Image 1 (cartoon, helix red, strand yellow):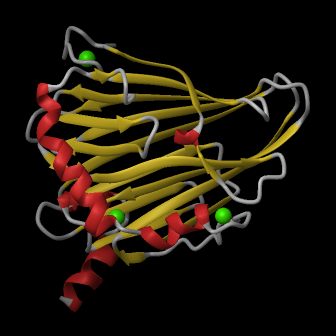
Image 2: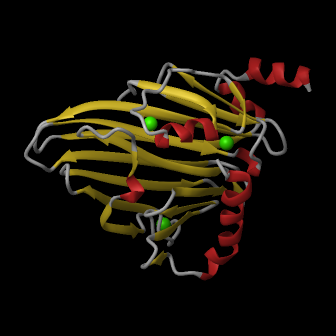
Length: 277
Ligand SMILES: [Ca+2]
Ligand SMILES: [Ca+2]
Ligand SMILES: [Ca+2]
């Protein structure tokens, strides 16, 4: 939406302050995870995850979640819900003693829906460009009425620290792939379980607008490839009886080099883009 003006300015303005800050700012629900060559930054009550750095290079502009339930006419971002708790922990103190895992519990009080989101960051050896972020979302119907829940994940990678020139696509309905052939080649891949009901690849702003357009959104299953300031979204549907839970597991990996792209079966796409340029 206003990424190039306000969004980037926001991120750039805050980045230099990270290192000097404690790992949690109590008043703003901000967390920084670090592991070997990687850092991930979260604003739990604002924009979700707003950075993922690998060997000092920004790779992610934003990841956040939305949901719709109980007759809502548009989606709502998890970050607008009440936060019951948020804790960062160190799960591998012998490798890197920084916090590398984050858990947060959101509550929608009127509908009785609880959303537990957990992140676990694993960096690679310095200079390798490898990084892994595992995520789990547990949706619980903590009310006393059955609920249909529509849940959305929105991801805007800007690989290699640049907003444009990324190619993104969805494979087999559950694997999101994105790469950037300019500068340091970066590739990301996300696998989700269970498979989403719907998905969509496209321009970051067009996708983000779907979650504030005033109407219930169903993603259009466009698998791409999309070239530009790419983003993608996944959508899950579930009916939860009182006390029931729904678990979504995802794993994102960032890795460099043309060989990585070839492994993803992107060789043809890369060749096409090179011929055009
Ligand atoms: Ca650690
Ligand atoms: Ca909508
Ligand atoms: Ca992007």
